[in-house]
Image (tube, rainbow, N blue to C red; front, side, top):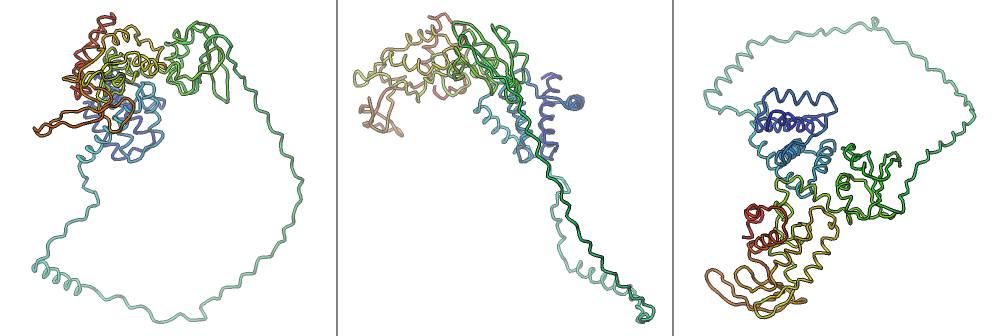
Length: 471
């Protein structure tokens, strides 16, 4: 990181530390550790503090995805360091992660890393001298006991007797008796009858302007009261055939109407407002669920933030690899893929795939994401053609075992080896599963070549640490 990035990095951390107006001791330890890790000198700390002095500083994301993730982890660590999570600390972090497109799984992983790092910092922190620990008493010895008795005798001899008190009592005549205090006079309160005031008439509420979407075209509206990047969102509405604004329940709303033939033409516009919590979609005057049409927006933002966007759609950084070029297809190339049961056994160890059933499953899973600008239909067709029509249970393919009898399940004799001893056991199977990712990578290479899609780093997919456990 350069000097400017270190200033922004540290300013974000200090903003979270001072959000609840109290900086605890453990928060100071975490901040010192962060300053040491990013190698920030005194001038960087001074500049970061000067940014916060204005009072209107807001969290700013850094340049690369790795820097953003590390900065968010450190902010979460500082928020957790005082032992309690205040809403003023966690809300700015949530807004920043929503804008950057982080999902809940990413946040859970960051919280775990922050907690582990915080435990290490607290464990390695030096214990202050005034920690309230009891002092160790010296071991009693005969010589020390004799010296203690001698000192007590010397103190007793040198003490003077207390001064004798005067025993004579003062004369009773000299004492003055206090005069009795007269009781206060009781004043009767007279009840004053006042005329009752009539309650003022209720103030009528200001009439709110109701927005009625037109019966033709596609209408998108959003609430700007919760927007962080209003200029960017309004710029996306400049292409609308009709646009305007109105107020509803004290909140300001903006709307745009497009007279287009297909919703796919508004994919880029929808991505600009998809991260807002309050937005609506109308198709020919009928409100439509946002996720059923523009469900791809969150995934598209995550793809744009990835260091390898082209490989992201194939599962890079996820738990499993997919051959369809879309991780939302839910048909991964792994041992847990249920779509490998599409078909039937032709013989004892030969399984024939039903590609028509696979296509129907793909269409059903990709329906909410059909408008994604990165979804290549010609590639999916090439990948389906590259998929083998039938496979033999040997080498890269093995039986998919099930525990209970179900539709399509049959009994097969499976040979297994345990501790060097081989035996044959009868098990229920309903399909096949791959033994590794090599077969999936072969399909991807062939489909990319036949469909003519953009360049793809196949070595990056094969060497991904997330999928190496399948090899």
